[in-house]
Length: 193
Image (cartoon, rainbow, N blue to C red):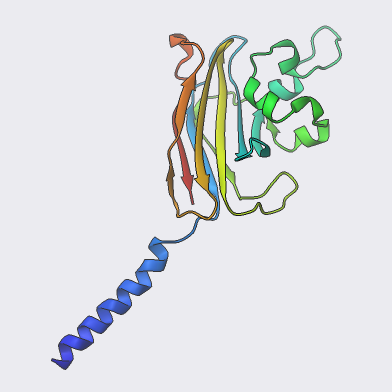
């Protein structure tokens, strides 16, 4: 009888030791996707950002450099890409109030458009654009990609910063079908870690 009680006690202790690891709160969010580089202008632009439930951008994780910095041609002054190609990730441009952002702010999250295809991964550490930890609660993650001109795909999902680690369900919307560029962004995953 004592041996059975001892085994039961040790089993309960083992289960209790495992439970906190299984119910561990998340410490950040990771979003990843397969990127297949497309040829020609009007494509290969994307942005990843987080908004609070009031629709305010809390932090931009990444925007391709053409969108934010444009390209100079024939001695012209540089202009942000979205000003002369309005189909460059328009939801991010609008929601982030890109026109109000300084070049220094934009430098903090802008990166080169990948020159080769492959898996892309970005992480959010639950901090805002000033480096402060955000209030616990619900937020939305967005990935918006200009597949080709007016063909824009957006993935979005709601999650809680005090939620358990695990997958975040993402919804996909597409403005206009474009079969020849459809694989630019594929296999999108968001995970609370």
